[in-house]
Each structure stands twice: as structure tokens, then as C-alpha cells.
Image (cartoon, rainbow, N blue to C red; front, side, top):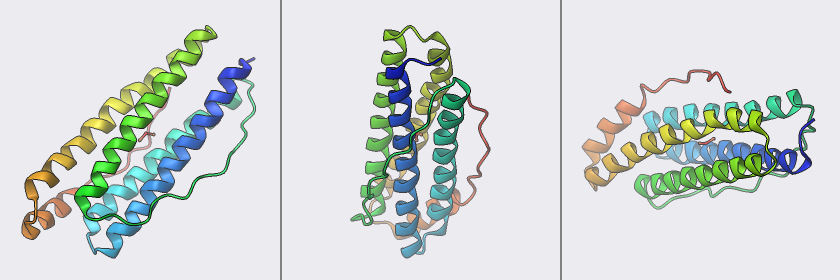
Length: 169
Ligand code: FEO
């Protein structure tokens, strides 16, 4: 049986993952409005990844005999000043998620839940990858500046990203 504090921490993180899905869905809509369809594709993959992250914890909590209690998902922002400003927020958000996974691991440490620690290692590695991927797009956007042609080249590149269902845990 899972510790009550651990169970609560997992439920809060399930909410944070589904909020991430919602935030990226909002960003997808922002880029659709700009007719940047490569960015739309990139966020579509991001949305699916966040859904998988949330469901991974959802299924794990049930597997551990815990009780999933879904919470309200906050309203995300719906507009950004530019693609660059939007990606700055993506990176900040991913850094925030990384800090949350670390805090979740602190709880697992505190209640000596080694199985949860082992499970959460996957999320920690995933965060390293996420921050790196987002950081690369952000760096490119900084280089692009006001160059519309270069922005369209990046859009073409982002159109090639594909979703691969992750094997979590
Ligand atoms: Fe689920 Fe982007 O972290």
C-alpha cells in the first residue's frame, strides 16, 4: 500500500502533467492562428507526450493500490507576444516541472518508497531530454530574430517531429 503523503504527491503531479498538456494545447492553438503548421505539429507531439506522462502516473498509482483523485485543471494563457516569448515560457515551464519531479522524489525518499524512486527516475531522465529539446528550439528562435524566412525554415524542421509512445517506468 502506498503512503498517504506519496499518494497525495502523485495526485498533484498527475494534475501538473495534465496542466502541461492543456498549456501546450493552448500554444498549439496560438501557432495554428499564426499559420505556422510545423510548430503546430511540434506542440501536437508535446501534448501527446504530456498526456502519456499524466497517464503513466495515473496507472502507476492504481497499480500501487493508491487512489487517483483528479483535480481541476487551471486555465492556461492563450496568447503570446511572439514565438520566442512562447518558447521562453515552455522552457520555464519544463524547468518548473523538473523541480516538481525532484520534490516528488524527495517525498519518496522521506517515506522510504524505493519503488516510487525507481519509477520516478524515468521522469527525471525525460526532463533532461525535454529541457534540452526545448532549449535548442529557443536558441534557434533567438538567432532567427526578425528573419521571417529563417522562421519558416524552422517551421519546416519542426513539422518532422513525430510522437513515439513512451514506455514509462
Ligand atoms: Fe511532463 Fe514536459 O514534462
